[in-house]
Length: 125
Image 1: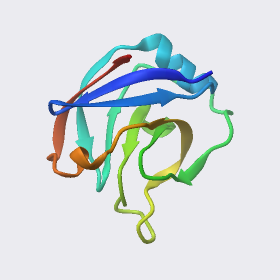
Image 2: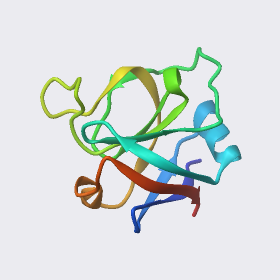
Image 3: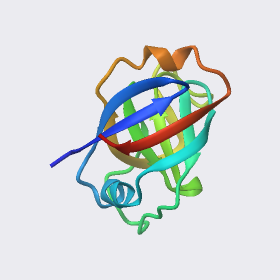
Image 4: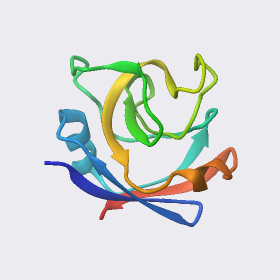
């Protein structure tokens, strides 16, 4: 069963949900997060004190707009809203395969106008 979360970024609030994967549920257990997210193309990411076991599947490098991912190489929570520097076209793409952990349910358009670093809070809804 998905877990509802709230993401507050630069004064904007977005509703989202985390899936039932072990990594997503480890993130749920570690909430709330209060961080400064960095922008990489049209992705925001920040490190969290969560580690995957390394063998979770499925992993992939291409995500969809509004999808949430976990980048194991940096223990990072990622929000995709468009292409990144490694994209091949308009799809959001991670630097290397990561774990899909959920999806933003609101319009992600407000993220497009935010700068290179933005205060971000992730908490249970």
